[in-house]
Figure (cartoon, rainbow, N blue to C red):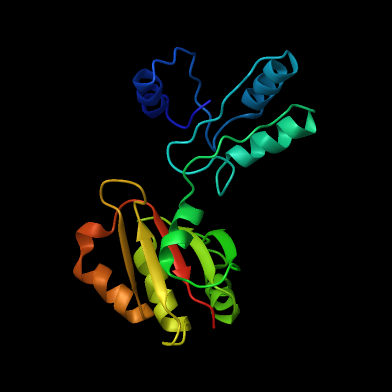
Length: 193
């Protein structure tokens, strides 16, 4: 099962893996879930592959994992890339405690979300899309004290990987001046209070 059969197809071809690929993403229907569960109950082995990151972490794969476990199927993890841990490991944030908040809300609840980030004393990590990163940086500039540092990791483990850090306004200004870099997947980290 994969987000995009073309992307996973390239991976399988590279390692000479011959198998049937089926699309599985956030829009999977109830019928798709029932078919997958029936295959698991029948003893079939199924791999869930994401295009980037770890399935089940801020990813629709969590729905399938929960249902598979509920049906008594064995679920194994094969460690792979995780934007969350990769970003934290190169952030320079000290300590071993942080709050992970998934994706920032699209519309409803954004103001409450950023107030929560500002009030949390431990470091906070969340994901953001290229379509909303500028609004997120504006919100962080407006709500965070200047003593808090913002670290933005973009396109981790890929060709255009980049980490930008500084006061909230500095990071916002960087991306305003470098609009060509407002693309890809973002991990936003805010240091603790």
